[in-house]
Image 1 (cartoon, rainbow, N blue to C red):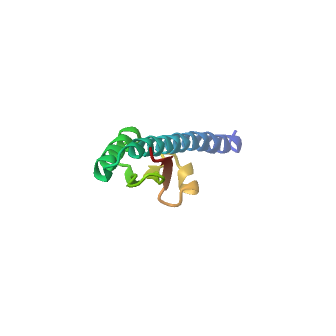
Image 2 (cartoon, rainbow, N blue to C red):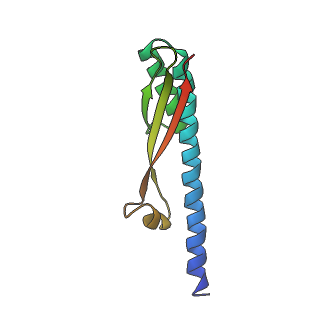
Image 3 (cartoon, helix red, strand yellow):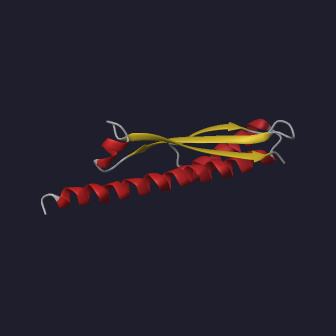
Amino acid sequence: MALVLPLLLVLIFGIIDFGRMLNKQIALTEAARDAARVASFGRNAEDSKAAATARATRIAGDDAVVNTAPCSTAGQDAQVIVTQDFSFITPVGLIGGGFDGKVTLTGRGVVPCQ
């Protein structure tokens, strides 16, 4: 029991943290893709940028950093990159994420302009 229990706990904590990190990565990718879709409709760059940023922060959270390149001409792609720091909650994150237990996750969305 003394040999198996620590290994089992490390495995369970790793599964929990990896699942949380994967969930956040999927949310960031969805936020970037949805914000790029919003940015692809507008011809006014400032309005499109504001609408895309609002859409991305609604999905990913207020602490997400959103970089938007909206459409200015036809034939161009609207691009949105959403980044956010992820903190592990279990001690396994100290091994996988470095000594501070944090990882920067990035989601990217590209949609052709309408």
